[in-house]
Amino acid sequence: MTGEQIIFLLVALFTLGSGFMVVTTSNLVHAALWLVATLFGVAVAFALLNAAFLAVVQVVVYIGAIAILFIFAVMLTRKDMRDQGPQMNRNWWVGALLSVFTFVGLFFLLQGWSGLSKTAADIPAGFDSISELGNALVSPDAYVLPFEVASVLLVAALVGAVYVAFNRK
Amino acid sequence: MVPLSWYLIFAALLFSIGLFGVLSRRNAVAILLGIELMLNAVNINLAAFWRYGDVLQMAGQVFAIVVFAVAAAEVAVGLALVISVYRRRNTVVADEIDMMKW
Image 1 (cartoon, each protein chain N blue to C red):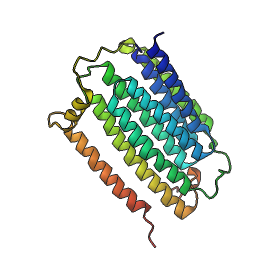
Image 2: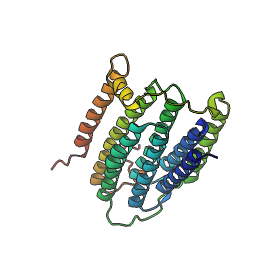
Image 3: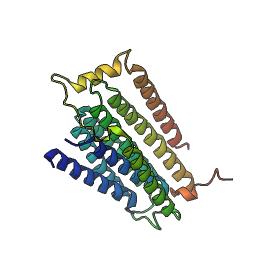
């Protein structure tokens, strides 16, 4: 087993363990903090995949903005610091069963695919993935249209969020 | 070198954990936390297919960025709805938010 594989396994175990704590812990502030740990593990996975820009955006946007938004929402929607009652609904075992079936289904789907044991080719010399990504995002013959549609969607959603959460006196 | 299958199985496990959270948590904010886990699993898949496919094709990373934007939009609208419902009904338990249930 090479060093890279050991690092990947440690990161994956850390991420999955934190993800499991997100969905099972009863204190929601703790769940939001475990989400930060999970997102950080995913950022390390991006770094292992040589996707440097995605790793940085993951830390800045997900941990810096979305996770903090979650902590705000948790604090704004609780009467006291303890959560009363069960955190799982009555049919939690159906959810557990469905998610296990989903994983088993995905696993068998992957088993039947021939490209599964593929290893990554070396990055070509002089290849700068960040400048390539920047060019792809603004070039008219690449992905400028999805990029602009995503930004319009984000503006519309944020305006809608302000409208929905606005407190009319 | 890590084979592609490890990343895909890792992402599938993270997706299943998120699905469990969405299906079984009572608190609406916790359901949104589960959705975040599922979106992150998708992003791992996109980045892995970019790296293990043709690195000169940036589609994987570009769509991961689109997923980031959609996740931010989804969280903003979702949490605004949760806060608005909390203000009117004084609850964030998904079972008790039944105004539209006939």
